Amino acid sequence: MLNKLSDTIYYLANQEDRERPTLGLICGDQYSLIIDSGNSTQHAKDFLQEIKKLNVPPVRYVVITHAHWDHFLGMNEFDATVIVNSQTYKMINEWKRYSFDDISLQQYVKSNQMSTMCMKTIQTDMPNRDSFKLNSPDVIFENTLSIDLGNKVCILEKIKSTHTDDSTIIYIPDEKVIFLGDCAYGTTTNSLFHYKQSMLLPMIKDIQKFDAEMFLLGHESICDSNEMNIYWEELTSASRVVKSTSLEKAIELFKVENNRDPNDNELFFIKAFVNDHIIQSQ
Image 1 (tube, helix red, strand yellow):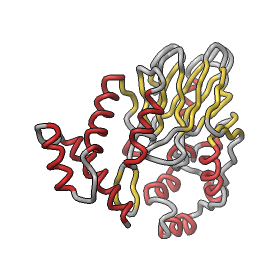
Image 2 (cartoon, rainbow, N blue to C red; image 1 turned 135 degrees about the vertical axis):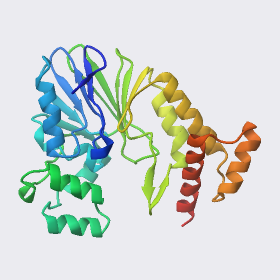
Image 3 (tube, rainbow, N blue to C red; image 1 turned 90 degrees about the vertical axis):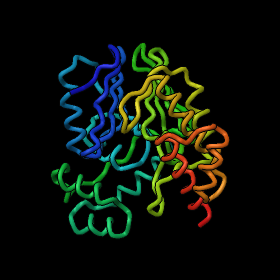
């Protein structure tokens, strides 16, 4: 079931148990635009089935927020122009070489080209996968792109991110709504979960220049300005105290700076920034 954010913005909520991120639908007077295409052909079909229940203009565009499998593997199901930034384009094109039979999938998992969850999702939710070949995106932009759907402008921008190097966000000015994809999350490298510390403040700056009141994230669904500000504050306060690979020193510095122990979120973030230092030192 689609959630209605306004008369022109809808979203299909994330399903963490199935590794399905939030998918968005923006409707103008003439056309509609979709944000992310889902983690499989079945995810995309489920989304399209829900859209059919609405009286909205035809879907003309699909924007992929970044080149992680759960956000683009449903791409082939949409009879629309697929838009990506140039870095996402290069990464998705790597997937065009993949085969999706069991032997190939198992080999990709073994060589760390694909997660086990990705393999299981493909096996479950992608019929005819033995002959499946991923399409290529249609429009590639470098930094920013504006799309007019008919009295409804969407601004696409490639931003710095703690999650990936190819993150695109989508801002709808008249609604003050922004789709962040996964850009505000951390990532895993060499089995260590971390936030890219050098990208944190530039990312926040890139996002906060937009006058947004509602934020849709890939795996949280929706947050208001107050919730996002709390998130930014906890992240930045954690980042400020991490200056080395020592968790103990970071926690001690946090206590000195804040006159209290870190809460559970802050402790999680501190550990993630420490992991980033460990990764950078390897």
